[in-house]
Amino acid sequence: MAVEKENYEWLRKLAFDHGARLFGVAGIEPLKKYFLLSPAELNGLKFGVSVGVVLSRAVLDGIKNHPT
Image (cartoon, helix red, strand yellow):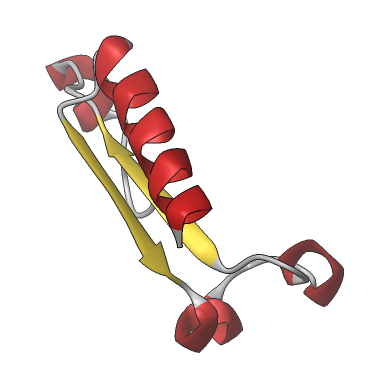
């Protein structure tokens, strides 16, 4: 668990140092069936990382029905 905590802290610091406003990590095992990735791409992945940044109004207006 110590390595996971170190990785979390390292990624969190990196994200905030580069302008992120939000940061989170979570286990993804129960959600893998919903991902648009092949089984080979998902193999070995245990965690998902989310980073939130502020976007301009122009960028937000360009989003129609899914992330771009």
